[in-house]
Image (cartoon, rainbow, N blue to C red):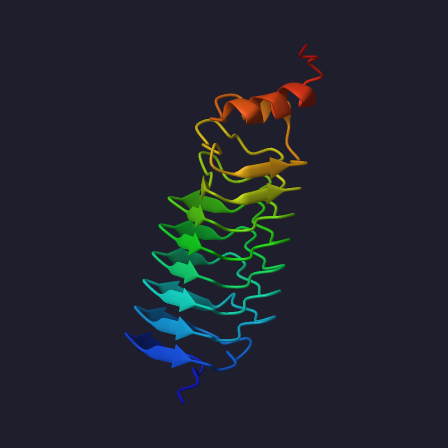
Amino acid sequence: MLIPTDEEYYADTEFEAIDFPDGLQQTTFHGCSFRRVNFRESDLRAVDFEDCSFSSCDFSEAVFPRILLRRNTFSDCKMTGTAFQNTILENCTFEDCRVQSANSAEATFREVRFVRCDLTETSFAALKKKSKPILTECELVKTDFTDTSLAGLDIRSCHISSLTLRLEDVKGMIVAPEQALYFAAMMGLKIR
């Protein structure tokens, strides 16, 4: 069983059913595969992940501050309370993940997809300019989009409830007819 160490470069390596070491320094993973790896409460501030796949991993309460995550896929991962503040995510996909109460405030998203993810109480507040997630069939309950422009964001396939956002930020957002009623009620419109 391979356990990663500080100041190493790992390419095309498989990691399975291990506890990821906390606080690794200057460690890079390129094209690696992680299955059932426990990243719980890990501080990943000095770790680079590029072209990696993560399947059934636990990232609960893990911290990804101010790093670049490029071309990674996350499938069936638990990410409750994960912190992505000020992180740059490029061409990443999250499928069937539980991302409740995660914090992506002030992050930069470039082609970041969430497919069938539970984003309950997750914060996408103050995403960097022109950043927005691509959402397909996601659960958006008490999700925070405060100070994030949502122009062009398509949420027609998502379930929405109790969103936190500013009405001026929803201009240009793409919604289903029944969702339009939700936003009309937020604006104080009375539909009869």
